[in-house]
Length: 211
View 1 (cartoon, one colour):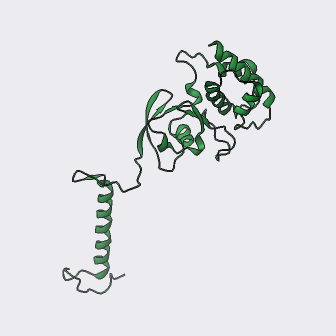
View 2 (cartoon, rainbow, N blue to C red):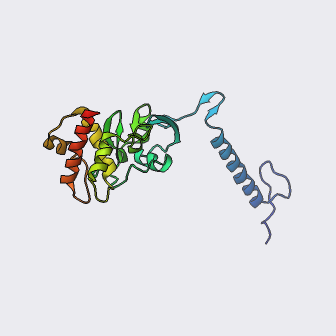
View 3 (cartoon, rainbow, N blue to C red):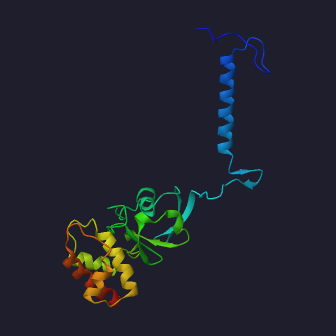
């Protein structure tokens, strides 16, 4: 098919069709846009970040190690731990801060990692269940109590309960059974084996006092 009538275009040359002229303009615009995207970070020595923008490549202190990771501004800590850092001991249950399966410690305080934006914990100490054991493999007293007492059935919720118990026992090392139940009340067990879980965590409290 013909390319269309030959017309005169601004600044053009004889024999250039309107269609080819438009194609050239579009191609040039795409090239300029791509170049601006690639080199927008620091042009002429100036930071071109817009107000409210978030740096994506950040460093996190996870289980005592500095981890460099590419994080989206809307990404949760649970997603970062599981899918960026491979720490799958942090479980995603409800994904709306109700079940507690994703609980980790941030500066020794239990947090639902599914509801914490990763960018907000830069410079803070993050501990997942993978970071509880000693470097030589010795289990944390709470972990050891769980193993000894076989306190969970399916154990999907177990990492969250363990992390919550570790954080709670730092603030109350000698709880009553009722206090322990209150301390763990933010975690749900799909098997509803709460009585056995409480037995195990009371033994864990005793183990931590002896440690």
